[in-house]
Length: 416
Image (cartoon, rainbow, N blue to C red):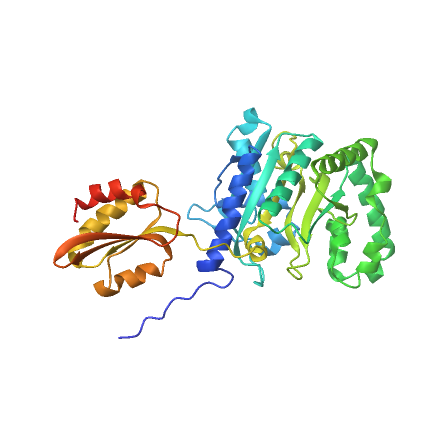
């Protein structure tokens, strides 16, 4: 009979366990705690959507849509895509579920997202993001609140040192149109010096040339006209309100005039929190205002601003969380006490204590095994001098015997 081959983990995925899982869980629990401070509601959306949701929102010429999406046809013949990000799905839900009646909406979510790209440190094909959005608020105050939330999250994770908030404005529609025209003229004048990728972008998405990493493009991109010369008074006032709000909240920022978003539905604020501690993968949280997104999905023109961060990248930056402490270890040092140990353990857990129970393996070694969990307190069920007994031992000053006496007596039936 042929030996069955052991299945392998799919490339670009991960099994999260132990210290790594504790880091991962710490990021998520901190995010949940901080978002509650800002009164953001939790929302959960499908892992897959109609492919059109992402093609319209991300742009069919972007690398995500053209190269990285996991797209498949289901049995009904519909084209579906595993979500490569959260914003498009939340915008779709806002439209299809009638959430306009609740606007402005402050929403957060988290979970797995999927992109087919080359796996590397901190980058996977199935990875995880946390996401925060404000939909239906056109005021600069919404941008400020999201940025202050992000700043507090990074502080409470203990990773704000060495992380810089880079900020830019993309202006309003009039600003963007004028700036785009100036950029096209500039890049056309240097067409013969641009990389092949940038020549393609020049036809479809010229603003993306500004963040090109190709050495051939950098001198041309660096000499391109800044957006400031094309800002309308309204756009300038919006950006000044955002920066004033950040200053008032005590959030440090620096201007990066080359920080762009290529798609036309982006407006006004664009931002990234960056670090030099992750090598080439320096962005830990990024976002911007997308006032034109919901309109591009067929809905009414609706203001929106949001950000996302990779859980894996944040987890790489935090100190290792402590292993959770065990309050009580319950040991059945003989098979006859296993039922009583189970009853006692259940009673202690219902009373709010974390309990590790030892009822398997060599009975003589169960107590030794229990001590390896580093409990604050131990309760051992055993037989001494022919009599059933319950012995207790406080290993740290965290608990006192009288905290357990009534529970022990009730659960063990007075074994002593």
